[in-house]
Image (cartoon, rainbow, N blue to C red; front, side):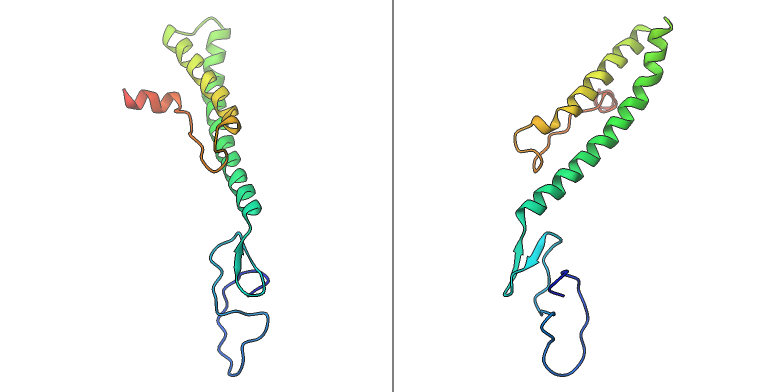
Length: 123
Protein backbone atom coordinates (compact mmCIF):
# COMPACT_ATOMS: atom_id res chain seq x y z
CA UNK A 1 0.00 0.00 0.00
CA UNK A 2 1.54 3.30 -1.09
CA UNK A 3 0.27 5.35 1.85
CA UNK A 4 1.64 3.13 4.61
CA UNK A 5 4.08 0.71 2.98
CA UNK A 6 1.96 -2.14 4.32
CA UNK A 7 2.25 -5.39 2.36
CA UNK A 8 -1.07 -6.62 0.99
CA UNK A 9 -2.12 -9.58 -1.11
CA UNK A 10 -4.27 -8.44 -4.02
CA UNK A 11 -5.87 -11.17 -6.09
CA UNK A 12 -8.69 -9.47 -8.00
CA UNK A 13 -8.71 -9.46 -11.78
CA UNK A 14 -8.13 -6.26 -13.67
CA UNK A 15 -5.85 -3.28 -13.19
CA UNK A 16 -4.13 -2.65 -9.87
CA UNK A 17 -5.88 0.05 -7.80
CA UNK A 18 -4.07 3.40 -7.69
CA UNK A 19 -3.31 3.13 -3.94
CA UNK A 20 -1.33 -0.10 -4.48
CA UNK A 21 2.06 -0.80 -6.05
CA UNK A 22 3.81 -3.99 -7.07
CA UNK A 23 7.08 -2.63 -5.67
CA UNK A 24 7.40 -3.66 -2.01
CA UNK A 25 8.35 -1.05 0.56
CA UNK A 26 12.03 -1.69 1.46
CA UNK A 27 11.77 -0.55 5.09
CA UNK A 28 9.94 1.44 7.71
CA UNK A 29 11.60 4.78 6.88
CA UNK A 30 10.51 4.86 3.24
CA UNK A 31 7.71 6.90 1.65
CA UNK A 32 6.10 6.59 -1.76
CA UNK A 33 7.05 9.42 -4.15
CA UNK A 34 4.49 8.59 -6.79
CA UNK A 35 6.98 6.52 -8.76
CA UNK A 36 9.22 4.77 -6.23
CA UNK A 37 10.05 4.40 -2.54
CA UNK A 38 12.33 7.10 -1.10
CA UNK A 39 14.30 6.81 2.14
CA UNK A 40 13.30 9.50 4.65
CA UNK A 41 16.76 10.07 6.14
CA UNK A 42 15.51 12.44 8.86
CA UNK A 43 13.01 9.84 10.08
CA UNK A 44 15.67 7.12 9.94
CA UNK A 45 18.06 9.26 11.98
CA UNK A 46 15.38 10.08 14.55
CA UNK A 47 14.39 6.42 14.79
CA UNK A 48 18.00 5.42 15.40
CA UNK A 49 18.36 8.17 18.01
CA UNK A 50 15.30 6.87 19.86
CA UNK A 51 16.65 3.30 19.75
CA UNK A 52 20.03 4.38 21.13
CA UNK A 53 18.47 6.46 23.90
CA UNK A 54 16.24 3.55 24.92
CA UNK A 55 19.27 1.24 25.05
CA UNK A 56 21.17 3.85 27.05
CA UNK A 57 18.30 4.21 29.51
CA UNK A 58 18.22 0.43 30.04
CA UNK A 59 21.95 0.46 30.80
CA UNK A 60 21.51 3.44 33.14
CA UNK A 61 18.79 1.57 35.04
CA UNK A 62 21.10 -1.42 35.51
CA UNK A 63 23.94 0.84 36.66
CA UNK A 64 21.70 2.62 39.16
CA UNK A 65 20.49 -0.71 40.54
CA UNK A 66 24.10 -1.85 41.02
CA UNK A 67 25.16 1.47 42.57
CA UNK A 68 22.40 1.71 45.20
CA UNK A 69 23.49 -1.12 47.56
CA UNK A 70 27.16 -0.24 47.16
CA UNK A 71 26.40 3.37 48.05
CA UNK A 72 24.44 2.20 51.10
CA UNK A 73 27.43 0.17 52.26
CA UNK A 74 29.77 3.16 51.84
CA UNK A 75 27.43 5.60 53.60
CA UNK A 76 26.97 3.19 56.50
CA UNK A 77 30.71 2.65 56.81
CA UNK A 78 30.36 -1.04 56.00
CA UNK A 79 31.89 -1.17 52.51
CA UNK A 80 34.97 -3.23 51.80
CA UNK A 81 37.75 -1.82 49.64
CA UNK A 82 36.52 -3.99 46.78
CA UNK A 83 32.99 -2.60 47.15
CA UNK A 84 34.31 0.97 47.22
CA UNK A 85 36.28 0.34 44.02
CA UNK A 86 33.27 -1.28 42.38
CA UNK A 87 31.07 1.67 43.34
CA UNK A 88 33.54 4.05 41.74
CA UNK A 89 33.65 1.93 38.57
CA UNK A 90 29.85 1.87 38.29
CA UNK A 91 29.63 5.62 38.79
CA UNK A 92 32.23 6.24 36.07
CA UNK A 93 30.27 3.92 33.78
CA UNK A 94 27.05 5.82 34.46
CA UNK A 95 28.75 9.14 33.60
CA UNK A 96 30.13 7.62 30.39
CA UNK A 97 26.64 6.46 29.41
CA UNK A 98 25.36 9.98 29.90
CA UNK A 99 27.89 11.24 27.37
CA UNK A 100 27.20 8.95 24.41
CA UNK A 101 25.42 11.78 22.61
CA UNK A 102 28.76 13.60 22.44
CA UNK A 103 30.42 10.83 20.41
CA UNK A 104 31.37 11.39 16.79
CA UNK A 105 28.90 9.58 14.57
CA UNK A 106 26.07 9.60 17.13
CA UNK A 107 23.43 8.22 16.75
CA UNK A 108 24.36 6.06 13.78
CA UNK A 109 27.59 4.81 15.35
CA UNK A 110 27.75 4.44 19.13
CA UNK A 111 30.62 2.91 21.04
CA UNK A 112 29.14 1.68 24.30
CA UNK A 113 31.39 1.93 27.34
CA UNK A 114 32.08 -1.44 28.96
CA UNK A 115 30.21 -1.96 32.21
CA UNK A 116 32.11 -3.04 35.33
CA UNK A 117 30.45 -6.46 34.87
CA UNK A 118 31.91 -6.65 31.34
CA UNK A 119 35.33 -5.67 32.67
CA UNK A 120 35.18 -8.36 35.37
CA UNK A 121 34.16 -10.99 32.79
CA UNK A 122 37.17 -10.07 30.63
CA UNK A 123 39.65 -10.69 33.47
